[in-house]
Length: 444
Image 1: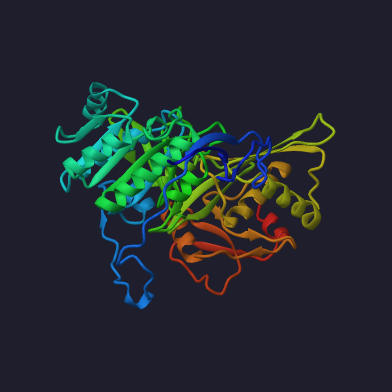
Image 2: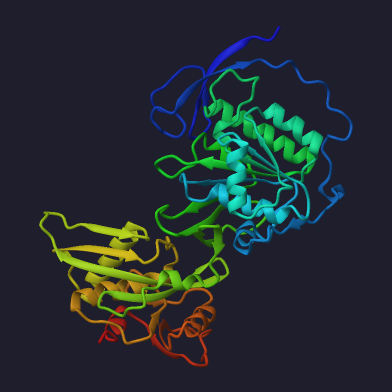
């Protein structure tokens, strides 16, 4: 007879140990070890024919067939569409639009193949109300169930091509003696859903709740078990939403999808630059062009300096890395002689987007300098460039694409670093700068 054993598993990294520790010996997280009971499985039978090791040259190669969801922004983030047999995890704050987006995607997929929507949180009547609001056809298969075994049986019976699970924290595996949402349950349920996807060739979408830190609730190994991890970002009190891929085995993780929450569901934003620009040209403001995947987007950086009342001045950055802001302030002081040690410095990226592109460095520098001097950039001016520790303005990738987007948005004057690849663009006056001091001289 198999024997039951007790072990402790870290909810962050999956480390297993025979006794409890306050601090995980592997990742160093505190109070993340959770007790679980395991049963020794009998020894596996000999490996059946056809499952041994083979040469890579003998493996039959197949292109991953994709099915479009009918939502261009979602297809962009997925890498071009849904891959059969893939498992996609979508996380985000409550009320941000995860279920609504998947309901709309299910409506578009119904004309191509059967779709099964399983909810462990809502009743069938609640699902119907949301489906009617999103204009979903009555052919959608709905199921209110929390048992993975029952879901697997229904998949075997209905043979859907797409399965939506809402949400992973409510699902349970009856063979595991622990509560729904626990580390053990989430791991076992995800393993079972992955098995369903691979055996039946059914694409599975899993909705996951997030913690107050913004990570998907449950063990970190959950993200390693699935093929794609998507995060919904944005303030749920604001209309705009950003869908970002942080893992994708079938596409790029640099793409983002932009949506607007409306009364009838999630609507795609055709021109995202509109939502990231305030339309004003005031002191302490600068417009930059960044790249999100293959898409150039115009953003506006705002800066405000105020006299500090503390021994250590505050540095606060919304929409960008706070450490990057402090580095740029140090370069400004050392290379351009602008002292900010007696000022609180606040920066903000309009629209709530998170900027990691170094091409926005020059915009931050000019916004801060404009706030210090009470000066502004010329009208319809955009800036592009990375700032090095020596004060040099360095070129970034896809300069021509960025300049072309600036011109398309009506910015006829572009301040950019010198680059051999940067040639003339019709409708654009390009001013090249090599250092911070040259760039600061363009403030009026």
